[in-house]
Image (cartoon, rainbow, N blue to C red):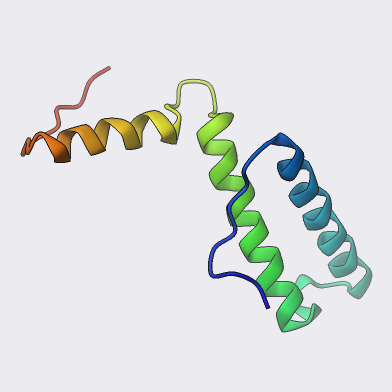
Length: 90
């Protein structure tokens, strides 16, 4: 079985996850529906897709969006300093 949460550590691993997700999509396409994948394949697809999304938001944020690494660092500083309100900036 798979770990509770999959975490991508680098670009090489990102490419491996991406290739595996594409394999699962192809398998679902052959079956004519992703819902026809085995429960294990559906779970793997979901976990790998979530990991790809999380890595992408951290290291390749969309234009105009903040990296989750930066936003998490800011929120941690707010918590550590005991601030009660985080003002929205633009």
